[in-house]
Image 1 (cartoon, rainbow, N blue to C red):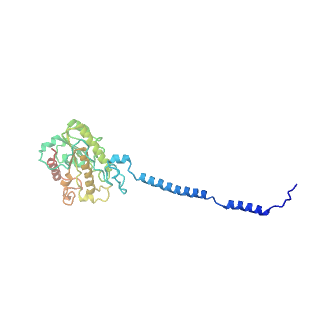
Image 2 (cartoon, one colour; image 1 turned 180 degrees about the vertical axis):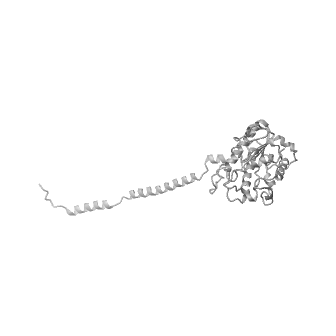
Image 3 (cartoon, rainbow, N blue to C red; image 1 turned 120 degrees about the horizontal axis):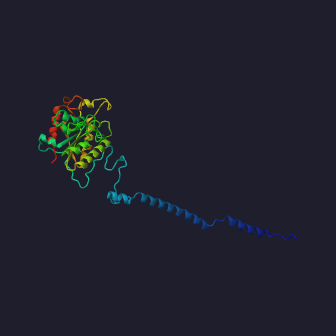
Length: 310
């Protein structure tokens, strides 16, 4: 049967009012937890950032060991410097250090007591057209000169050259085996300094010097500086037509000097001895701005005879 009892509306409304009020009320404990979680998240994020920043700014142990620096005094790389092989500065080749266990020679070779012309009988000269002039003008015995026009440092060990002492053209290293000279002079690079890769030229120089020292450990090896050029050579319009600058020659000679120090051999600064006051080969001693006359060759060999290592 249906319940026809009167409803106590006052009690019913109070009960539902309480329920509605409970639904609208926010739990203060839950709010505190949310706020605390938010604050902790911020703090943790900051600590992680700070720790990562600190780690990235420290010098690694391997870096410290390789440079010999402490973490308190790290070596800081120049951010503007170009990448280069160890020991090299930007745009220039490295000046190699003398290998450990060897004694650095005094370079360029200083002036010494003059040797007699018979000294050349103990020598061997390797080079290009500049070197061949030593025999052409008979200032050095032709049998002691192994040179040819256009001969380059990168092909010197593979290219046979003519020589009066041999019936057939002979390779330089074979001639060294045969003659066993006490003094070896090298002058190569005049034909390539303006256009050929200078790094490869220096590398080839180093290989030639190493090979000679291996075959002749008790002989003296001299690297002769490239000789200067005259104004007419510098004034040619393009490199393709033969233009060479004395500034290029000077830079290459600096590298030859550094190489001589590295290989513990001798360096002769003939270049300075042949320059005039303007820093060039005098115009009146050359027809093409590069090759010179007999008078200059006499000065050339006089320099060699008065600059020998002890």
